[in-house]
Length: 151
Ligand code: HEC
Image 1 (cartoon, protein in one colour):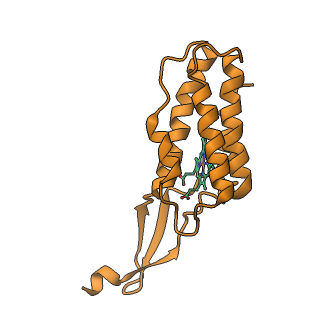
Image 2: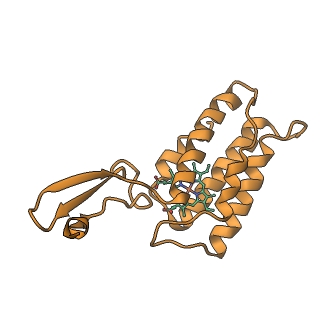
């Protein structure tokens, strides 16, 4: 019984919104019984996992856009941005809802076949909305997101 409660978080290196994402993969836990240290792989919130998926998807999409042809479709699971649970310290607010709506709209535009706006411009618009939202409350991943932009 005690075993289950004998680990406290000494340092939770889980501030992915504050760090550039380099050290956010592990948590350091120290036993109060014998002082031994353990590292656990960080299991992110539903929202954090969705965000990582969005990053991975857009990294792939960037290549397609650069090659001038989009072969993937808009991933419906991105709509989970409207309902996914956040990391403890964060919560849904008006700013988030505003930007998430705009982002989904922009991401969908990339898949519109007969648009008159150039593909790379539509792609960058979506990535710029990732950045706009991140500037409001989660600045850590910004350098990583900027790399998605097509120059
Ligand atoms: C509407 C606001 C908003 C938009 C749009 C948005 N994000 Fe996020 N993002 C957040 C918030 C808030 C978090 C923190 C979530 C949490 O900790 O639960 C986050 C977290 C992240 C993380 C860190 C995940 C982790 O490992 O903890 C990455 C990377 C990320 N976003 C990338 C992106 C990318 C790439 C896009 C666009 C394709 C994007 N975000 C669009 C608000 C947004």
